[in-house]
Amino acid sequence: MARILVTGGTGYIGSHTVVCLMEQGYDVVIVDNLSNSNVEVLDGIERIVGRRPDFENIDCLDYTNMDRLFARYSDIEAVIHFAASKAVGESVEKPLLYYRNNLGSLINLLELMMAHGVKNIVFSSSCTVYGQPDANHLPVDETAPIQKALSPYGNTKQVNEEIIQDTCHSNANLHATILRYFNPIGAHPSAEIGELPNGIPNNLLPFVTQTAAGLRECLRVFGDDYNTPDGSCIRDYIYVMDLAKAHVKAVERMLSGAPTEQVEIFNLGTGRGLSVLEILRTFIKVTGVHLKYEIVGRREGDIEQVWAKPDKANTVLGWKADTPVEEVLMSAWNWEKKLRGIE
Ligand code: UFG
Image (cartoon, rainbow, N blue to C red; front, side, top):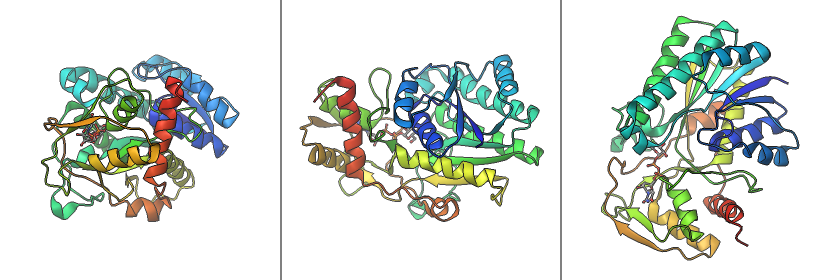
């Protein structure tokens, strides 16, 4: 079976994807510098799959060691590139760190792939590239206009997409699949792996589960005066395991030579938008855990509403995100309970 290089493979989406790849029989080598993840994730993966992925503690910015890695694993057939800095607020404080990490890593990878004859890359992008789509572009499909990024983080995703397009344009042998994720949530059903945010979570679900677990006193709902049915923001929350499976489909498609374009782009979402308040109410209902929350002012830079039109991924990749949100929220809670030793 083919070997896949997964950068950022001990991270949140990366680790779930590694599980799905290995369960399909792929050999995986993870490259991760553990800057925002934990080496024990490898134990979780091994407990789920029954095999341990190869792991190399290397920073993708380290060209020399990445070059050695490609030489050592000469059978790599595709790269899935997750490794990146991803905190929107931090990127505003430290733009150069974000530009260096996120652009430098991709540039190194593409150069090394070409030098070592690796022809396929799957890139982690984000619905952030669409900004706030116009009403006539909701739900948002892949043809919706790209809008000026609201943060350096968002800009790195846009520029990385352009770097991939330009590099593929210059080299007919290179193929890319760009996956634009909506809002990934949840954890593996075994609760062996899940999201491990550093410090105070920025994202909604980890804040919800940490509040439910008693680590945070009160969840703040950022705004109930948006132009949405209940006034809170709307997102397309996608189960991380469904998202992981889309990566396996993308790799299969590339390795079978099926892509019709050198760079294929897919939106990965459920097609359904849920408000912050709907998420909270559903969480409380399915877990039975009371959660204290208060409505506060809007968070700067938040988009009012965005959800995906995932038809292209549904038909072309033959993939659908169909796990019920109740099950997804329960998986997030089970993971948090296991982390905190809650019965
Ligand atoms: N929210 C709260 N309270 C919180 C945290 C979040 O009300 O404590 C709300 C936000 O205001 C937003 C929704 O929950 O309405 C989702 O917020 P997240 O931070 O979980 O997700 P975002 O949609 O803001 O961020 C996601 C990705 C980023 C990406 C961004 C682009 O996590 O990587 O989309 O819009 F850049």
